[in-house]
Amino acid sequence: MKTLAYFDGLILIVFLIGTNGDCGCNKLDREASVVEESDKVCKQQARNTNGHYRDYYAELEPEIEGMSLIPGGSVHIGTDNPHFQADRESPERLVMLKDFYLDKHEVSNAKFEEFVSATNYTTEAERFGDSFLFKTLLSAAEQKRLEDYRVASAPWWYKVSGVGWRNPNGVDTSLNGLEQHPVVHVSWRDAVAYCTWAGKRLPSEAEWETGCRGGKQRKLFPWGNKLMPKEQHWLNIWQGDFPDGNTADDGYETTCPVDRYRQNVYDLYNMVGNVWEWTADLWDSNDVSESPNRVKKGGSYLCHKSYCFRYRCAARSQNTEDSSAGNLGFRCAKDA
Image 1 (spheres, rainbow, N blue to C red):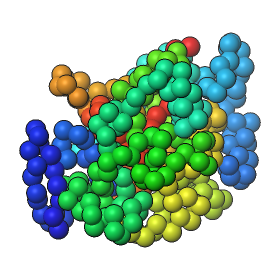
Image 2 (cartoon, rainbow, N blue to C red):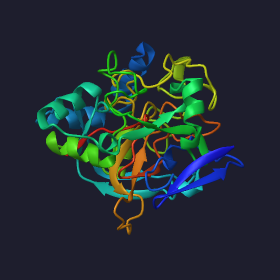
Image 3 (cartoon, rainbow, N blue to C red):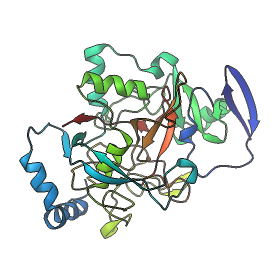
Image 4 (spheres, rainbow, N blue to C red):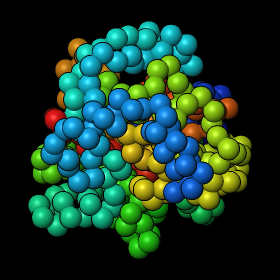
């Protein structure tokens, strides 16, 4: 199977021998190639087991619309039981954090449009003239036409000209009906620009993971260890056989609205699943390259346990600062 990779302006045609255990979205670099039952459970947990958070939150002011106050202190992040050693999920470590605010929702298309209208901002995907789309968003004819623009070792990802945040699912698509879905095809620098305009910032990886855990320790997901409590869907991920058989049992073939899945007592939505989220952290603290890798968290609607079990609080991945794709977005944080 012929694929295409980019190295310092050169084009390299390679043949795919096998696949790695991920959806390939960490390779999308320009340098290289509301569930009622879940609401009940969360509210019950808040009443029964999180009195500290409720009391703490109620005593602090001011509240910020659309953001949750996350208590700091000594918190555990990472895991001593990593699923992907190469992702540096381990070891578990204790970090000290100050209190901070975190957006309850991923930044939506409507919110990002407000930013663009106010600032006349142009995203990096718009300046580059392309971004990455997953194969299921392309017709068979489009896949054939673009077969030489697939990503090496992840041939289900296509580099497509004319795709950006305004037409997230293809050149001929729009934001109609997607106003409250997460903005995608935004780079790390685009996310920083939005957060700065909003008087906020990107969360650190430790802040993001602390928010994700919802006051719990050593749990896989924001709500606990069971993927489907009460046999209800709590997140938007891939169901079926990756990359060709998404049964969409959760009701979504691509993104879902940013307020669809409330996942913990911090009143945070879609911390895992839906879209990957940029964080402020460098993947390599010593990386001084022009476009270093940044940590992203949470997994996306393309993740499945059999292939990319990264919709866990401790899971992590990376992309270069200028990268963008149809499953990569962000949310903002703010100092308390």
